[in-house]
Image (tube, rainbow, N blue to C red; front, side, top):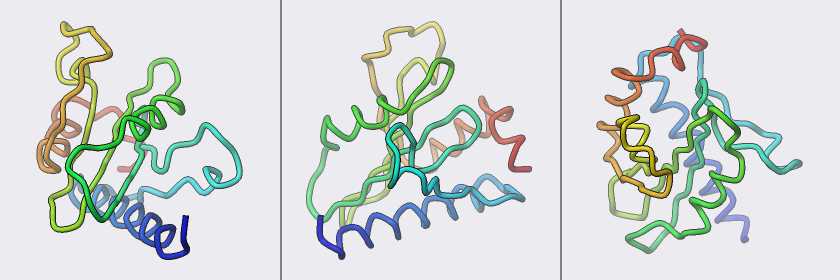
Length: 135
């Protein structure tokens, strides 16, 4: 990974942390988990039970399978994975498990990609308890 790619990744993580704080009206900032660079099994960002992995790439349409595997790898019992990704000149997208939208849909292999606004809506409407630590 080149220095520019690493900087782009760090910048995107900071951007998403700031957007989460602003769009969810959080008082406490969402901090990047810097241990991720020294130890395994840490997400880029964490809000309550949500482990958030951020990926920004120049070209593409669909996120790489390895990206989703990475966020699953840091996910513990009772936690929720989210992959926030963006390709240049494309909007931010968020991949989550369908079961995080509806518990009756329990197959953890079924995924859905949301636009940013829908992800924020999901957190506000269904996962307020996870936002409490930042209010």
